[in-house]
Every structure is written in structure tokens, then in C-alpha cells.
Length: 412
Image (cartoon, rainbow, N blue to C red; front, side, top):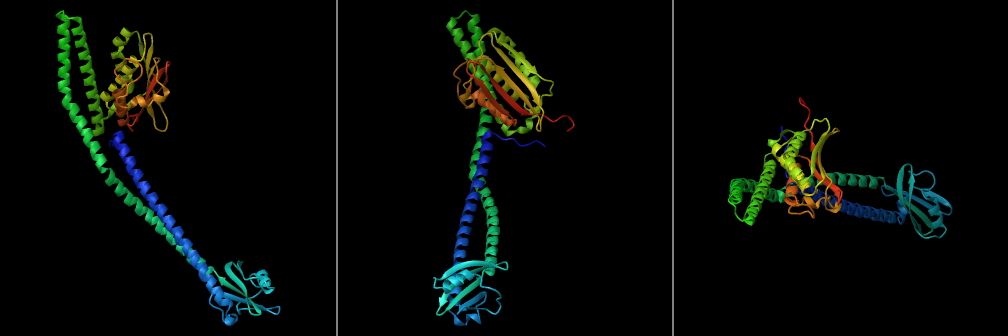
């Protein structure tokens, strides 16, 4: 089964959809947390106010000592004697507050813990008697814990629902972008396919015109212009071919077959030997024992290496060196690495990403182009689930590195 590959634009669309989903869920979660916090604050305040109301009512009720309200304990102190509700034993929960109020101090609201239970207390004077009422908060705490647990469960369910809603919303939001990307791919593929034949014919006719002018003894300037026309039609044909390859890889990733990247590098280097000899440049290959097999399109990978070598040739002066090095990196995910290394005019380190933008030209060199060739080369490599990067410094050369996933050994 072949894995589905996508263009950088489609990958960006999917990342945007995921970002919309996560942002929707995060916004919903923040709203839920804020509402839960407000609900908890209101409930806590309401419980506190209700407890104070019950305690105030209990301390002014003279009969509370014999018939206390539910959940409330009563202590009374008068003439140095302390009385308590029938179910109470021992000293008051807050003896210090009781003594302070009995000595003429103001009303005291406090809290205490006894027997593993929490109590809210109110100690105040009632005539000649000092009363301390204690409300057992166990029931309120239990209710509060149930409320918080319910809010957490509801929040979790709400977040799941928010993720689902966000996912649906994101898919609907990016669907027009996906359709536009697919239409763009189809247009590029169709237009490139339709342009191949007339461009090939134009290139052949330009070659015939150049030969005719040269052999017929025409004015040298006319023959030179015809040569420029031949070069222009060839470059235009190369651009169309690269566009077609990029579109085909994006639309039909099933064209991937095992490719020996080292052999492709040798073929590219051999094909350029005559050209580099004329320029006085040494072009060679270097490699380890391999294997260097990757899943890919032979034609597409060859054109990527052609573009990188062509770019290097354009930026190396006579006497320079270009090396195409291929080696395998065995790790958790084995890869095959191909470096195109030159000692030419180099690259500004701040422009190592800019040179992969479409229609960007380098500041130096006479190679075919920086812009669309390198941009399409990166797209082709990314369509192979790989990476294409550049490093270098001005005046000391540059290295273009291709990293591709290695094919599994036979039989796996």
C-alpha cells in the first residue's frame, strides 16, 4: 500500500485546519473554565452567606440550646458556667473566642476543625449570656465537591464536543482552499502537458535556424541571436518539464519506484563532463558502500540533481571543484543523503531559505537560474517525503543537501 503524499500547500492547509480545531477547543475550554470558576465563586459565597444567616439566627434563639437547628451546635456561657447542646461533649470548639466575647469583646466569626469535621462559628453576646454557634460544614463541602466533579465532567465532555465542532468547522473552512489547490495542480499539469509539444517544436526550429544561419555564412550577430533563441527555448522547455513533473508527483504518488540515488548522481555527473571541461571545472562523485536506494521517480530525481549541479557550475570559476557525495545514514529511520558541494562564490547565510523562493535570483553566478529551478527542486524532494537545504558562506562555496527516506531492504 502506497502512502499518500501531498504538496506543501496541501500540508499547510491541513496544518491550518488542525490549528483552527485546536484554537476552537482552547477557546471553548477557556470559556468553560471561566464559567466554572464564576459558578464556584458564586456558590461559595452563597453557602457562606447562608451559613452566617443560620448562625445569626441560632445565637439569638434562646431555645437553641435545648432544640438546636439541624447541623448546628450551641454553647452558652453565663456566670462562669458553660452549657452545650445535648449531643456535645468537652470544651467549646473555640474557647478563646468564647472567653474574649464573654470578657466584653466584639462578636467573633471563626472556623475550627474537630473530629475530622470542619465548622464555621459565630460567637456573640445575647444579653447576659455569651453564645457560640457552630455550623457543621460537612454537608456543604460534600455538595461543593459534587458540584466541582460535575463541572469537570461537563467540561471534559464540552471540550470533546468543541473539538468535534472545531474539526467540522475547520474542514468546511479549508475545503475551498483544498479545491483551489487541486484545481491549480490540474491546471499546471494540463498546461505543462499542452505546452510540451509546441515548445519542443519551437526548440527544434530554433536549432535548424541557428544551423542554417551558421552554415549559410549569415551575419555573426544573427547567428549569435539564433543561439540565444535556442538557449531560451531549451530553458523554457526545462521549466515546463519541471512543472509537469512536480504536478504529476503531487497528483499521482503511486509512480514511486526504487531508485538508486548514487547511480542517478553518476549519470548526471557523466553527462556534464564535457561541459565542465570547457569551463575548467572538476566535477566528481563520492560515496560509501550503500545501499543508496530510495522510493521515488527516476526522472524527477534526475532533474533535481541536474538543477543542483547546473546551479553549482554557474557559481564556480575555472579551476574550481564540484563534488556530488552520496551516503547512507542508518538510524531509527534510515535515510540516503546526497550533497552537491562546490567551492565557488558561496551563499550569504542569511539567504539560504530565500534562494528556494520562486523567481528569486542569486547575486552571483551564470547558472541557469536560482529561483524557479530551486523552488521546484525543493517541491519535488518534499513530494518524496524528503528535505532540500542549503548552507554556505560567501566566497567559500555552498552545499545543497538532499535527504530522502531509504527504501527498506528486499523482503521486508
